[in-house]
Image 1: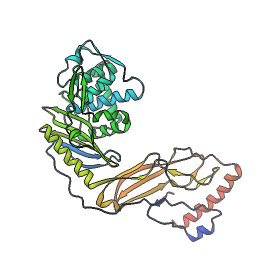
Image 2: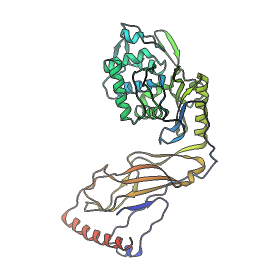
Image 3: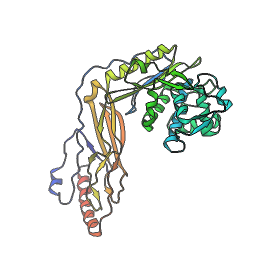
Image 4: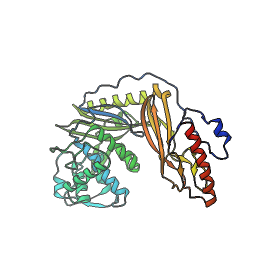
Length: 403
C-alpha cells in the first residue's frame, strides 16, 4: 500500500497508532515548500512573424510559449549546434584535445557558404575549428571536423543522428554537418531548444565560446552573427542560421538573475526580424515567469520506516535539483507531493528508487522526479528482523482498519 505525503498537510496520525508507538513507527511528513505570493497577471504570449518558435526554461525544461514547435523545417546553420556538441563531447571524453591538429582536405576547403577560410593542405587546431564553427559559422570548419572525427561527412551525419536519438530529438534528421540545403535534412524549434539545453548543461566549460563577439583566423576578423550579443548583455548564445529555404533563424539563450531562457525562432524574413522576434520572447519570459528551486540535490525530504534493516528509518530525497518554472501570478498554487513506496524492506542500496515526487500547479501536474534512497540500509540481525516482523504485522493490521 502506498502512503501519500503532502507538503501542505499536517500530521494525520490516528490516536490508536500513537498508543502503539512501540510497535509501529509513524510516517514522517515532508517539509513545506516556500511559495512566493502572486505578483502579476499573465497575458497571452506574443505572436511572431516566424514559421516556428519556442520559449523554454533552460533549468526546468518547461515550455513557456510555442508555435509550430514540432513542424519539420530546414535548420540551415543551426545544424552546427550538433556539430559543435559532438566536438565538445569528444573533448570532454578525452578522445581529442584542443591542441590537436586537423589536416584540411580539398573537400573541406571547397565547401561553399560561410567560411572561416582555412587553407587546403594546412593543419588547424581543434580549438580554432570549434571557434570557427560557433562564431564564424564556418562550413569549411564543420566539414574538417566531420572528416577528422568520423572519416567523412556522411558517417559524421550518421553519428549526429544517433546522438539526436539519444537526446530525444524526435523530429530531426541530419544529412550533413553544415546545414547546407539537402532534401530530408530537417529539425524543429523544440528539438533545437532541447539540443541547446544539452549544450549549456552538459559542457558548460565550452559554452562561453557562444558569447564571443569576434573571432580572427588567418588575419581575417569576423563577427558573430547573433546581433543580440551586442544589444542585450544577458544574452550569451547560441547560433544563427540562414538559407533561402530556411529563412533567417536564431537560437538564443539569456540569463537574468537565477533564470535562464532558451528561444528558437525559425523562418523569419531578415536578420533584424529574427533578432527582434527573439527579443519579444525573452522579454515575455523574464517578465511573466520565474524559476524556483524547490529542493537541492541530496535534500532529505522524508524518513519512512524501513523493515528488517540495521536502522529503522531511511533518508529519502532527490538525486538532482528540483527546479520548476511557473507564472509569477500563479506561484501560490504550487504544491508538491511525495508518493513513497509502502513496506520498504532492507536491504536498500543508496540511489535505489523508492517513490516519486510530484509537483502540481493548481490541478495541473507540471513535474515528476524520482525519489531515491540517500543512504544504504543493510539487513539487520535475526533478532532485529524478528522484532520488525511483529511491528510490521501490527502496522499492516491497523492500516487495514482505516482503509
